[in-house]
Length: 136
Image (cartoon, rainbow, N blue to C red; front, top):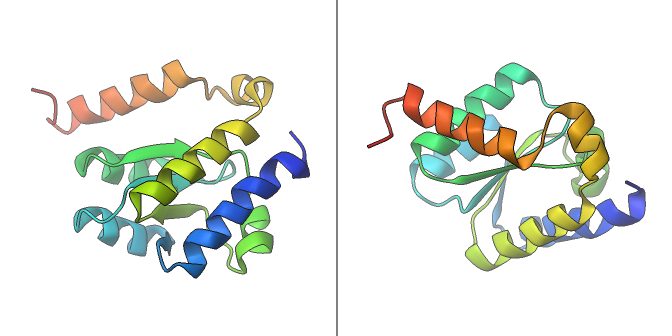
């Protein structure tokens, strides 16, 4: 995973910010999710486990897709001008573009080393839903 792969992702996040469709930080993202305005919640790869668990719970309770990024909070800071590990996109079209850029930037080998394969992510989301009584 190199800077070139992440540059498209960071550019897309910059476009979202300029369009006023990007929330940054736990409280703004949680508020946007509760108002049904969030289309995609994103987390930096170096976010603390506690914050990751809390934002995954918010995403699950509000049925918002959650995706881990291959960029650090410092890379987000360099790209957007604000250091944040939790972001949310509030536009469906922009969310799809960001999702595609994030998937293109993802390094499968690094994800496996971090235990972030898609099966683990889906399994943890299902466990959170069940834990919170959201499964029917």
